[in-house]
Length: 350
Image (tube, rainbow, N blue to C red; front, side, top):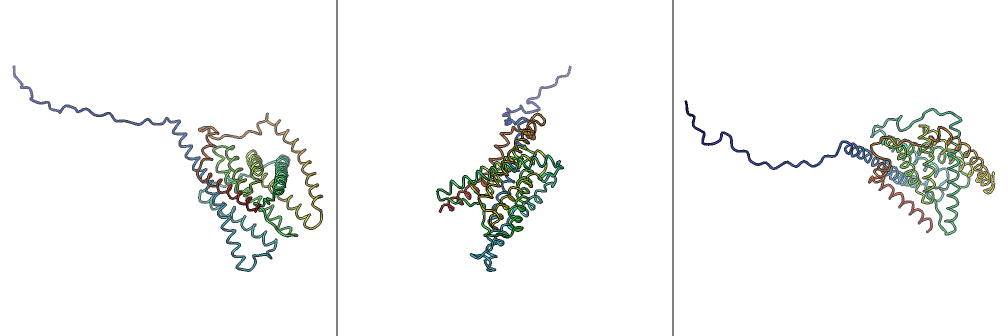
């Protein structure tokens, strides 16, 4: 029997004690989806806020540039004609909303069909929608006039977002700048771009943010709640039929009626009392028709006409709203416009 001596040391050194590695708890797959969704929504809401700030900034800068150019040409001053004022406002509106909006769409590579839907609508249904929308617009106009009258009793002249065009403005130019251009430019910006960017996340969210932006952009503190309500109606109608056509028509008709009233009074065709009476009769007729049409909408499809889609269910609707409205650029835009509106109101009282 052969003897093998035992080794004096182990062939391998003894294992040393290893500290356990700490791995922080990872969010669940569902939480990861929520966080990703929240980041995307916040990113798009910030993008919308940036666009709105650009709209307002461009409006101020371009307005100053236009005034400087006209001053250098000797066209700006006490003798400024109503036509020139209309041209100024028309040019600013075109540049601010169309040019800035198109550049934004190109930079973000937005699909035209997704932000400017124009699905076919039956003439009868379109007429009903326009009647209802116009009724809400006229009602808001009445309330704003009433509130302005109350402010006037205290010496406050609320002129935010308005301009004077003289005693007898050019009819076609007045109609173009006050009714046609805003109908296309503002719907392009608010119910088109802004609502189109946010709509994939939630139709209700898109309606809410676009309407609030529409109201704030007018820069009129008294009109703010009523313009917001009009924006809600415009946006809701466009969402339901997936087309910008109804809001464009309603916007044009609302502003066009104001133009018609001003023209009739300016050219001494009607006095102010008669024009207001005609306006009131039209409002009553449209109100009766709207009641009938709304009742039809309620009965249609068991009332589902008045519901909107919440989009992806990763986040509940309240969380989506909270995520969007706490975006830094949207907060900045709201603060700037509220300050501007208050400043306009205060200076009107001075």
